[in-house]
Image (tube, rainbow, N blue to C red; front, side, top):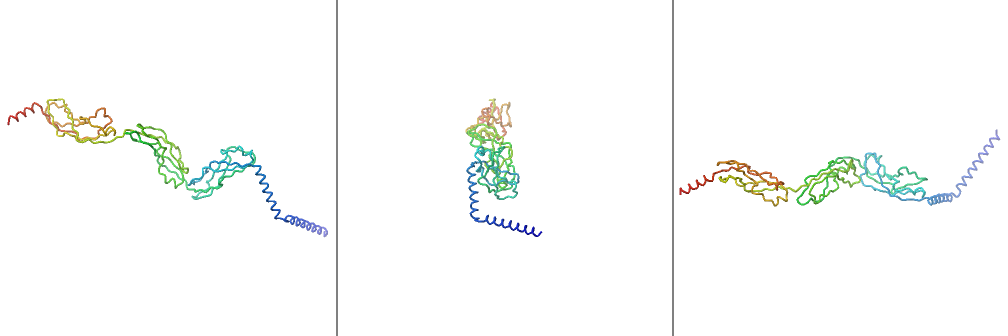
Length: 346
């Protein structure tokens, strides 16, 4: 038993000495060995790169967001992507095959964050071999705010002026409001949306159709339809005009009567196309007192009636005064006899 123990101890000693020699051999000239190792790695990398090819693509940058925050400042719409791999592997990869995106779903508090730009191959594209896809830049500093919604009115935008003597009398859109969504600070400042401009230059009649709501801010989203129905009404420009001291017209066909009235002039207000009223002179019978029904002398109260000829159908008399007059009707023979009697008295 003693011999066996001595043999075991001898074997362990020889094994330890062997390990020691190997370790000493391994660390011998270690700086040179490390340099050689680094050189080998670099040489391997260089050789690998000589077998690979790199392509550069410009692809859209999108935002993946399933949280409560939203970008509050503009960010690049596109990024530069490098695709590195075997020439035969990446040769068929185009811009439509690569997507670049940032995922802000995990952020819950307003602030500025550095968000990594991620990439993926689209669809069922499965290139052979290994490829590397990188973006420039690889990180994006982005301000995030709470996302809110609100309803704002939609205003129809019109450009130009109608034909001379015409004006827009009414314009409307349907629906009259739209729901917008975006960062709280931006949404709170927006009070309305406008449509694309519609020309009314030199028009004499109205029109209807559809118009697109303008949204030039990439941080703002319009929920629902981005088009509205519109109606524009165009008519002749109207004005009000007052005529004073207009002689009343007493209409009678009975020449045996003499008519006198307590009022001989009147005033009236008229509304109509501006171009017509600016040069219009009212006809003599515009305010008529009809005496046709009188068959015997006496004192009568008769209404004043406005009369507009057919050619002035676009005019409308809004008001006039007096509404009635008191007339005294005398027979011409009787009046003549009274005059002769008065002369004989002299």
